Image (cartoon, rainbow, N blue to C red; front, side, top):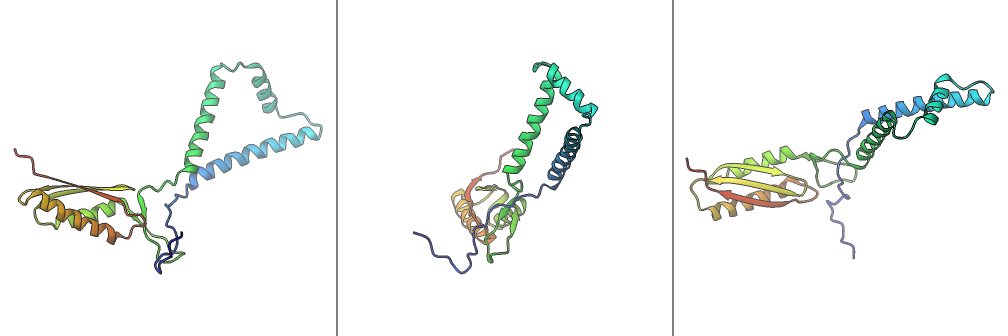
Length: 190
């Protein structure tokens, strides 16, 4: 059974992907140069001209070198690492610091930086009576708040802190509401 769409629901707010223009440009330039060079050489050989010297040398080296040779192993390791790097770049969104917000319109997307969200929630935590200091860490799935209370009962401060932070998380307008954990302790006596 499908849930009915609310008037403010304008579709799924997915994660933000980084553009990664530099790695894409470098790979495209290298592939274009190599393909152009090989295409020219193959066309020259098809036109009954001799292959380029570098290609004859490369074919001879590949035919005579052993697989356990240091240069062959190093070249293979570099190729594997470059391939793995490109696969990781292609498969991961990249902008992990940006939390997607609820979508109000189909063609409008908004995101909130995790550090900005943590700062807003920390400021709200500091407004609670009895909180001496607070630290808020905002992750993609969980928000951890730690506070030091110096004069009120810890359970009362924890309840107030949980209520205020839950309201603050709701007001942030995040697409996916993260879980909230609140820890309150007394200051360390010196």
